[in-house]
Amino acid sequence: MKTYKIIVYVPETHGDRMRDAMGKAGAGRIGKYSFCSFTTKGMGRFMPEKDATPAIGEVGRLEEVAEERIEMVCAEDRLRDVLEGIREAHPYEEPATDVYALESLQMDT
Image (tube, rainbow, N blue to C red; front, side, top):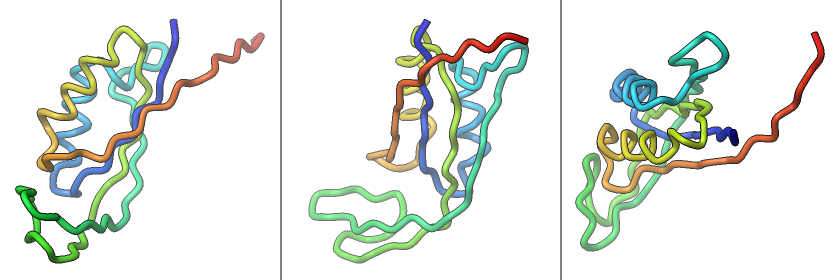
């Protein structure tokens, strides 16, 4: 089965909520482990434009927010559920999310 890496950027205040939502939807399963993730902290920058409804900041003003980049793997059959979980748990109306197909490498042990 095909595997994907999902990356989502979320305010630090919502990091635990996002990891939980993604894990409950099926992301982060590696072998006999679940809820596996990697997090990097950084600064997100954006400017809400006309007709936006920003959760943080104001229309027309550049905003800077302490955010986390959360990475988790996901099996193809759970991808739709995980993406829906991200939308439900994310405070922004347009969550920045990347999805990459992963190549599988079989290694003899």
